[in-house]
Image (cartoon, rainbow, N blue to C red; front, side, top):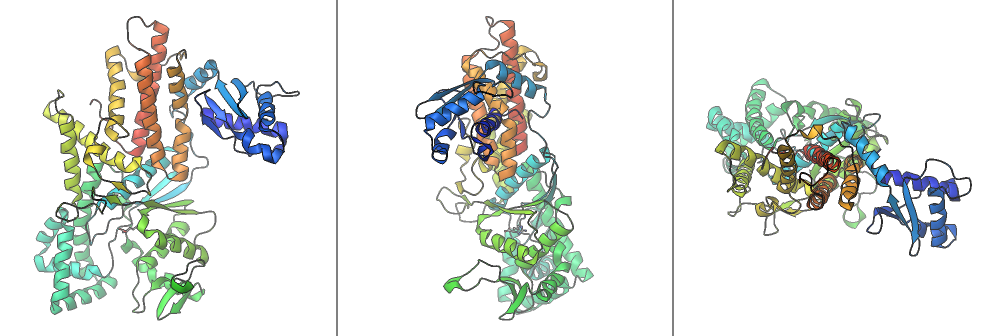
Length: 584
Ligand code: ARG
């Protein structure tokens, strides 16, 4: 553990226990960075009522314990100074030596202070999940990007991550989709689907379904043979799905997302389990027939006039739905995959479905208490008009076109710089994808945001390109110095306040990564990286590194701080899935 804030939290808790008894050992010391010292702890104020003592008196007792002045005090010497100020604040200043020591430790640690989770957990991350019968839209882009960042973070922490792409690849629409494929011919259908024209394809099939009775009848018959997994129907279904997945894969590969075909676990995979799911739940009395449909009524869910809300797992016509598949899925994940935790990275609009699913699964005993199931709610992506993001003509936007546009615009931002065409395309790709991904990741996953190319591509502010540029700038320092960053190892000397601030910041990296994993909150890592880059800028403006009048020891220390900052920024961006171009 290197995070000063966590170390101080532990120390203050020990002091609390020693001064006031073990009842107080769990109190949150409320340690925050401060402008008057390195940190300030506000715990004396929050505890004074409970202790029936004046806050300043409480603060003084803690300070005495911490600094070893109390009678019988023992333990490690406090690595700094503590002062009581104002109504009872504890101002904590760490010693330069201690900070330098911790910094040397994290520099020598190949994991830069990010500890592995022990024991490792098995975690299913359900993300991306576009529907084959419709076009993949920007909402899916966001669940893909956020889910992928969470997968990377958990893997880095040593957890076993099982990515599951819960494709919408089954159900009644597939009857008409397959018949349409026969009508227009396999080759034409495949070409259209591979090109990402899924929407047009769906609309053409739908139009015939609504207007042509003969087609309508064929489509219905096809649903029956599909449900029965009749071989010829399955062959056609595979042709349709394979072409569709090839389009999804183009999007994934352009984005640099880690999903592969092995991660596909679509709705179709659970088809053969659905009848048993319903039977078992009905036999055990978890599900009951209501108006002809088989429903679970999980406690605590009511609709209009306080009527209990049904979670319907079999319709009155005998058909299964989204809820049935999700019950089968959760059972499979818990029983077969033996997960400790499941993250559902899905649109916020599905919040009710998700909470009813979890409640129903708990009721059925399929989701034991020791398994955490969470809906990582994804907020909507809006256009500049504040409505769902669409093209000017009102159609939904084809994702590949959107990604291409990001790259073209990124290359334009880099105009005027002296690169050949190949380098410009490569940097444009990294900057364009970095901008789009970072825009999704830098706001909290459940809030809406406006998709705005100009803002996400800006070279200043909390953007992907700003952070990419920050790493490129540090790398150029090393090019000028004629050395590799890895060879800059210090020792660290902390004379200037900007050096201290930078060292304290990088020491916090590990705990931020943990927080991201714990709370499924990639935006916290984004905020941390942005802050790190800003603190680095202050450092670089105040502390010359390569100037002639900098003495060799100071220069070595500052180069080490540059190298460590670079490592933290690069590792952090990699965990977010944001590519880092070598130069910019
Ligand atoms: N295909 C769904 C959609 O586009 C998302 C599926 C998410 N996963 C799940 N297990 N329900 O909204």
